[in-house]
Length: 324
Image (tube, rainbow, N blue to C red; front, side):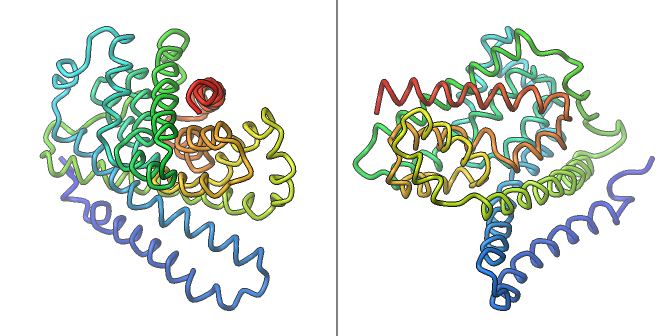
């Protein structure tokens, strides 16, 4: 039987190709930028490389965790760790997202790995949404970006967890198995654990990495085409400002560990609008939409993304009214 160790081109060549791509992105930023005279073009190159470089370490972390779950964690573990009833498992999985210090790019392959190990889709989706939004790194970054304003940290945690749990419950009630692809087979019967780990990691890294680049291209393009004057004009209109920052969070595709500093810089907007930016970004943005489509398929993506976006905006508005 052919194993991962019998296919060096897959287990060794592909990771090296991915590392070369990362190197080219970084080198291109510093070597080509001085020769780009158009400010918009330079901004486009900066945003594209920044999104990729920010996301790649966490994408690799998520892929490694997903591969480890696939290769080393027995399926019986999840039946013991999570409640048997799906509706009870959803909030437990959402709270479990608080302990993974990664961004949204890491949560997608981890959630896929959880489904492959038998975790119910609603619980895995709750983890997917909660992990990049309420983990300790993100909450500390939010506290640093908003000094003297602990209410913003509490509001971000509460609104994000509420969205994750509600989305999981709604998917449990209305979701259909046909909208999600069948979980990937975990390993060949005769394949060793380390071989299964390398095989799964190489497959997911190259697959998700391609969609990350597509999402970064879209984010960079839209970033330089939206006039800044439009944002200033709508900042004083409460409802419109919330929707605008939700839309901006989707377009900018900023890593969840860094988005609080961007939100804090938007001084013209209300605290509720800033909260919306912080809640929407880690759950719905261009690179995430591309990763969702590549990992879970289009049938899932065009249903789950609008649901998550609507819940994120509503939860932010209610939490901002109550706490900020």
